[in-house]
Length: 137
Image (tube, rainbow, N blue to C red; front, side, top):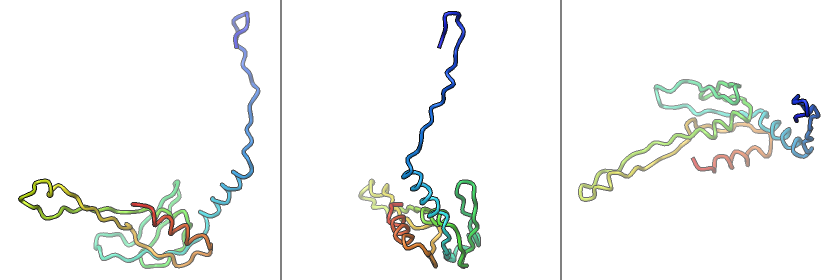
């Protein structure tokens, strides 16, 4: 704001917003849910080149998980496992009478790291995981 002597005045009154309690409670509840311990079993693999363990990461926090050993991890890392999908493509045998048929790609999707939940003490945990698994790859 300019005055008659060309000096500038700065308004130092701060505006403060108060977050509604219900939003804060919901965020705290969700944070607690994603930090709950869940025991998972990462399936073994027949791939000789696959590492014996994987390292999951969420917002800079890491968690190693060994294959074939029940491991207790936070639910946030279970979400990473549930969302790790791999899609591989193949082409059908070419039909020489139809040039376009050779350009088809057939995709197959599966979990990159198949796992089972061994123990989840939260009764809402199973429904949450089923909802994640039902999402398209």
